[in-house]
Amino acid sequence: MLKIIMNPEVVLSIAVLSLVIYGVNWSTLKLSVGVLFMVGVITVFGSWGGELPGSSGLLMENSWIIMLKIIIIIGSISILLMSGSEASGLILMVALSSLLLVSSVNWLSVYLAIELQSLTLFVLAALKKDSAYSTEAGLKYFVLGAVSSGLFLFGCALLYGFTGETSIQGINSVMSGDVGQILISISLLFKLAAAPFHMWAPDVYDGAPTTTTALLAIVPKVGVFSILVQIGPVTDVVLICAILSIVYGAIGALNQTKIKRLLAYSGIGHMGFILFGVAIGSFESIQASLIYMIIYVIMSICGFSIILSVTSRWSLIVEFSALSRENPIMAGTLALIFLSIAGIPPLAGFLSKWLILLSGVSNGYYLICIVAVISSVIAGVYYVRLVQIIYFQTDGPLGGSLLVWQKVLNRGKKVDLSKSLLIGSTFFIIIFLMICPKFLLQITHDVTISLY
Image (cartoon, rainbow, N blue to C red; front, side, top):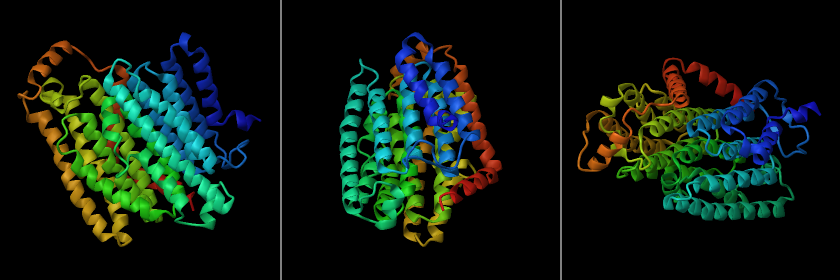
């Protein structure tokens, strides 16, 4: 009984239900952060291996799952600190659904977790009721999310009809590359915004509130990544989408004028690299994908924290001009983050890309690795352009008058404590990984072993 009560999912479920009932009268931000911190402690120190008690074969727990849960909890706490008190209960729901998703080993529990996550994100994307862009973002995410769910259910029906099984491992032991598995993979690739199923990402990222954009870019992708690793056999679909995502993510961002649309295409490219590691399927490539996901989450948290502190509601790229003169420390941090995302050595982003490419070369994917390197060079153009805007571009005709008024309105505006802590801690981790990556390599190696 104690094991059931002390499950992270149970604790978070009770907290979410309490907030739904009584949250109107409480200050929910501190409570939500405290609950997630407690859930993180339970996950690290109170975890039991094997099937979770009371789950009836729907949920499992091992070192891999615990690691991904920790990433989700850290990402969710970061989003809460970015957002202030805005929609804390909904963010907790996304965290709960993501924790359930990474633990799921049955297609029924996977579907229920994905639906809880998707329905909450629909609401968060359309949170600004007075904004036509936010409403459009919520509607697009809703419609395409419904299509994705339909494909997922159809795939599950086909698999159950062929095998009589609903567990992931049971189906994988009977068949591989079936139509049902392909449909499920396509549905999951929708959630990751992998090309050619990425069409919703730029518009939803741009129209949704910035904290929701940060949430979409970080937390849901961790759970979907975990399920794709467990599926395993459907490598051809994942590999094709990985190549398309790497190429399209590099080319699509070249002419963007808004930072959130640029980061949407950037995220598509990053998911391409992660999917490439998953498609290769070797121990080293899965480990490299996990390392890439961890570094991607850290860089995204730091980047979005700075963007929320610097830009206006328009989130134009030109708003970063002259940042180096107004706030040199913030400018330097943001420039290094963009260069790290671009994969410039010796920054942490280079380590993640290099490990994926090393796995590709070791397994004979020479042509795809060449395409990935060329795409990374193309993607580096718009990241270097951002750094050039931060340091060398003065306010030109594009948005000049807008920026004048924006600076007048924001004069004396300081970065709040929570965002400062996020920026400082994540930037420290990025610098630490440049100096001592062995710590991360050892942890991910031990975690990946639990999959085999």
